[in-house]
Length: 494
Image (cartoon, rainbow, N blue to C red; front, side, top):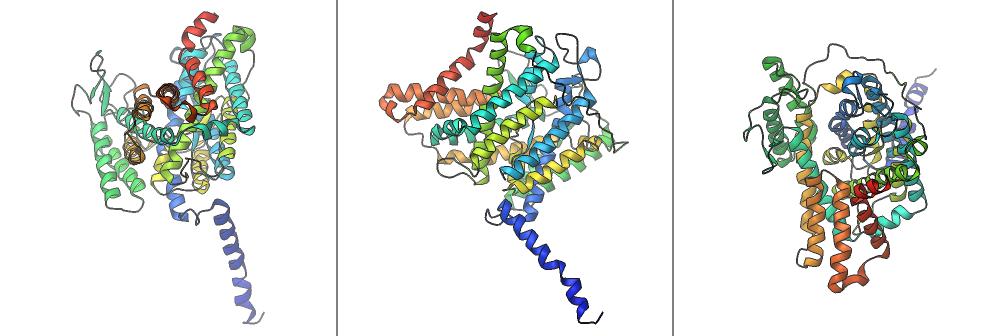
């Protein structure tokens, strides 16, 4: 081979590599959305870090280490903790990547906390776990049907712009409130009034809460100084501080008995890194609930799942799109229909794996705050979740208190959208206010949306503005009325 041939052969892969990079950039619209590869990577990592707690928390809600401390179903069955952890990470990884590739948006997926709690507390006392997951699958199929026919998008488009902005602001307060509670900065007082208080007996007296405050200050200062990767740097730095402090003071986890302990997991270096997963829960689904408890009772459970899943996800997507600057003047964002369909598939996948319905996570706002704007960030987040299937011990290093600091910061960023709201007309001010305030106070995005919808159609129509209201919004408002009174309806049924 001559010397003139060598450079040509060695350099030949480079144009192909540049071409592939350009095609991937074009597919995810990284450059056109004003992002970069490094921002997408950092955003994906930060989203995973703030969501990783679900691999620990979901098994504690759905499963247990023994039958005496697990949610036992009507036949005495229960879900082993390690199996739930494995399917939680697996389903989150697959759905997050799928959403990133199809919808190309930076929204992480995992088991929704509202629905998993509803299953553990209200459903498995009537049916088996397999039957409960069958109801989740049906819920997902209904959502996919509504999205694929365009009805879900029509409902989205029928929401007035002020309510869409209010949903974003409400989710911001909700995220911040979650962070404050998870960190122990805000705690239940145990009294009727006030129901909550600052820290322990009105003071910041625990090490974990102090770490939260340190993290809040570090991330806040980095953002204020416009430091790149502020959230990621802040999370890593605060986690390092937490690990050092735990090694010195040995506080340990709370475990429901130690109020001074870490909320979920103590920040300690794991003794083992790899853990082989047990995926035995995949496919453990039954549709026998209709026979066990009757058609009407089962339909009411599905109705509750659909309404919660449907509007929680819609509200979260609206808020995240606004935060990422991807929403237009009417609140629409790219590939809306695809996003709504894949979100429904998440519910089906979660039921099929017994991980509970998988949906968009509001913690994705942390990755967006770090710069994520495309589905490329989702691929990174999803890969990390898939790795967590085998490396679950590593997910326990970052304590919930550190992730909580990032959530409060993201909440502050989302609440800033309130500047776009007009409070001069009270017929819209009251629905806007109820949408914003009901979300954090009831710990539910769907409840806030429902309060906003119902008050909007009633107050606006009785104020002489009924012609401006979409008929579809009236239908949804009536549906929310049934959703809010479902308890008496279920009691009446049986």
